[in-house]
Length: 215
Image (tube, rainbow, N blue to C red; front, side):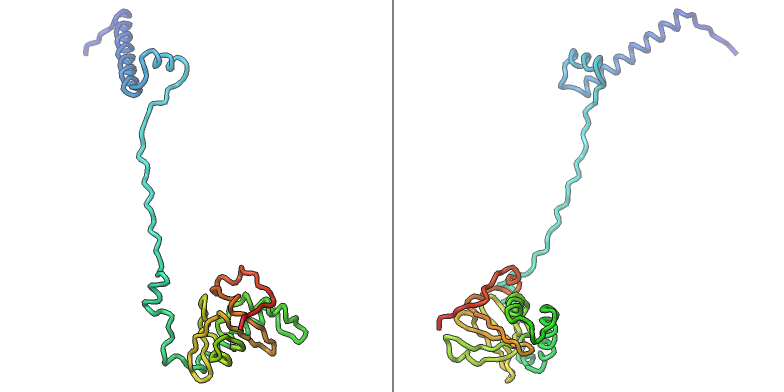
């Protein structure tokens, strides 16, 4: 086994060489990492504060979720989604719907009692869902509509579709017609010309308790 002893001067020379190499490496690394800075600016930064080396990260691209679009009104009409088939146009089939509607209105009005204010019922009915209501046409510019009575099956912005006891589906325009809705002895009037809204839009609409129609 051979042992070698280095003199202090040799050790000092090796340390000095290592330090110079380390400094050269650091300078070269900083130069590559901060190419936009001059040598003087780089040294100033090193003397004053720490330098944050530049780095780049890949931003995750958010995948845009495609919103499923429903059918347009035109497409629904073309597909005849809301048409009631002739074999289903039977008054007796919709009597349970009428009973459900009456219970819905009773709950909405907090119970219909003899001393209930008719104005309150009128205000509630104007904003309520009328599908299943017993509706009658009392006045109209077209005499053939007067007297039509039945269960309201469908409502659009401009018409009521009413199924009569004779199992006939009548399409009655709201314009220039006055309708009555009866429940538990209370009769409310609907002025169709002021009622040309979709049922979903009525909840935010303010109606006048009295209306007029030009006949």
